[in-house]
Every structure is written in structure tokens, then in C-alpha cells.
Length: 84
Image 1 (cartoon, rainbow, N blue to C red):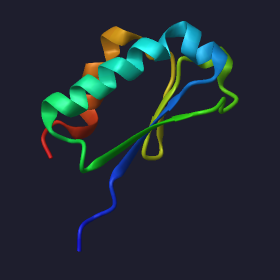
Image 2 (tube, rainbow, N blue to C red; image 1 turned 90 degrees about the vertical axis):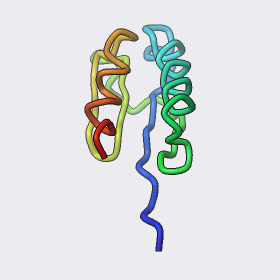
Image 3 (cartoon, rainbow, N blue to C red; image 1 turned 180 degrees about the vertical axis):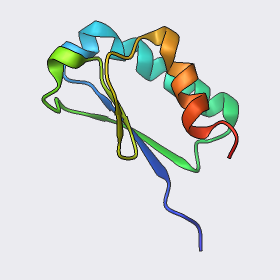
């Protein structure tokens, strides 16, 4: 039996989207494709999760990353999924 995929949820509410999650979503998609992780990771957008002042926000599993800028995206993904 195959384990359930890990969920990456990126806030696409207007504040997070305007503050950088539009670009962050592109970077995550590119990383998933490049690393061949599409089958084991579910990536989706969410509406506002009420953390606007701390955005742009990204959730991986139960962990929430706040204030995510494009420079940090790959480091976060490598930290979460790198050596598994």
C-alpha cells in the first residue's frame, strides 16, 4: 500500500498572492517537476487562511511557513523533502 502524498498548500488569498505567492507557486511547480516528486506530493492553492499579516504563507503537512519569499522556497522544499 502506498503512503498518502504530502500536501503542500499555498495561500492564494489576495494579500499572499500579491506579496509573492504567485511567484512562489511557479517555483514550487518547477521544483516538483525537476525533482520528479509530482506523484508523492500534492500541491494546491487555498483561499485566505487568516494569516494575512504574516504572509505570504505556505503549509507543508502540518507545518506553516510565514513570510515566504521566492529566495526561501527551494531551501524550504529541500529541508522538507531533500534526503527522503
